Amino acid sequence: MLNIVLFGPPGAGKGTQSDNLIQKYNLVHLSTGDILRGELKSETRLGLEAKNYMSKGELVPDEVVIGMIDKKLDENANATGFIFDGFPRTTKQAEALDELLSKKNTSISAMLALEVDREELIKRLMLRGKESGRADDQDVSIISNRIKVYETETAPVIGYYESQGKYHAVDGLGSIEDISNRLYAVIDTLLDK
Ligand code: AMP
Image: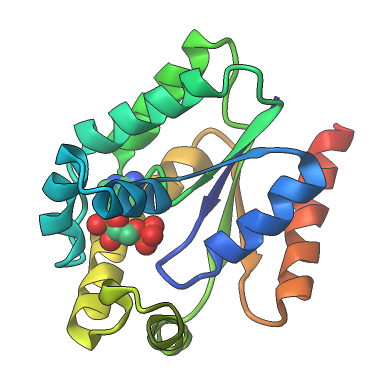
């Protein structure tokens, strides 16, 4: 199986690049942000619980998102691989993901981390907020908090995969196509091994 963690701060382009990667490598896209927004839209108990965190740009509790991923892995038991987008966001989530995958006799192949500077992130998120109407992309203070949460709680996940020899930094600036080609280059090298 090819299991990729597509990593990066909010606005790094994880969703856009996931769309290209799932097509090229026939993978299932698991975005915890998308799943949570779906739950919120359907006004499920989980969605309503998550709303309080999402509206402030805080992380939803680990147990909640780990449970969501566990369920999605079971629902896609025949997948040839997964792109994890926006997950894991804490070291605890990364450890739980390793456990869930090992129960299925598989593991993470690589973490591809998109690197984008802060000013560019804010610019991209504000633009996305205007185009999509996503509430947490329209308010500078919520955006700043999400970047801060990324730096304090999520960035340490890099070290987790680095110590496993699975971390690959990828320049997240440039055209969508250029960035996709950089990601393909890393994945193709892994597949050749
Ligand atoms: P995203 O679409 O990935 O930017 O996620 C939007 C929001 O959903 C985040 O600001 C968090 O509140 C929540 N969220 C998404 N993924 C996670 C996760 N793995 N752990 C905790 N909260 C998450």
